[in-house]
Amino acid sequence: MMKIVGVTACTTGIAHTYMAQEALEKECAKRGYEVKVETQGGMGIDNELTEEEIADADAVILAIAIGIEGEERFEEKQDQGKVITMDPSSLIKNVVDVVNQLENL
Amino acid sequence: MRKEFIYLNNELTSRNEIIRKMSEDVFTYGMIIDVDTYVNAVLKREEEIPTTVGFNVSIPHGKSEAVTEPFITFMRTMTPFVWDEKSGDKAQLIFMIGVPIEQKDKLHLKILAQISRNLMDENFRNNLLEAESTDEAYRLLKRIEENIYAEEMGNL
Image (cartoon, rainbow over all chains, first blue to last red; front, side, top):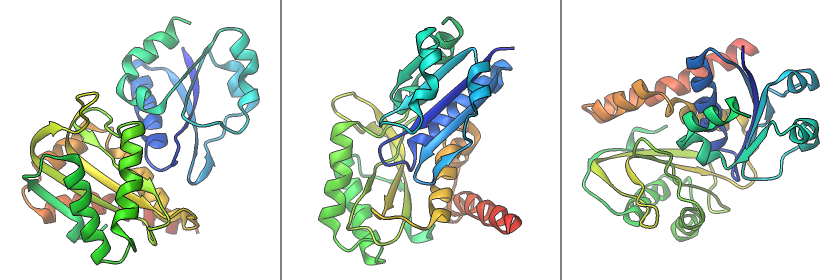
């Protein structure tokens, strides 16, 4: 089963962070993929990804409009070409295409 | 969530007028201390990146020193209209959010986050589109708030 992990973070940390999380979780559920999304928003870090979860993931999506805590956790995946970085609002609008892209990494 | 902040079948079709209209009402209830400061913060954000998220939903918002208490307002317009001229993005369901710069009260943020998540749900959006009265729309939104409260109580 495809495993996806992601981080969402927007500039104000109120709405897009959580909408992007929901959009990604929904799309992955629809496809039967395993997914975990860490949010870095107004409430701080929720649903934090462990090293192990990141290592196990087939693909990583960073839907971030700001610098995030612990970005270095994804360096190895980055080197493997398994990371897509984009704005959270693009993820919300294009979630189907984005998950297709993650599949094909 | 206040019933006074729910507007159904509004005939306005201009982003700026809508933001101003709702901000003036929020001001009356004291959640913002200066309409212009808040409106400018919201419009600045819209100019940088429009807050349309697809499905004819937009979520104008701003963190501003003019906001003293977190709030959310909801407007449903008669028809979808062009929210953002540059992108041509449309809106019909508009959620305007305000949060103080220093927000210590996590509960309010949690409610706003949960409403945002619900907007990704087609059923929830359809219910809001079909709500026949302000009361009905209010109940839909209030339910989210109550679930969060219940959850918080459960965690104590």
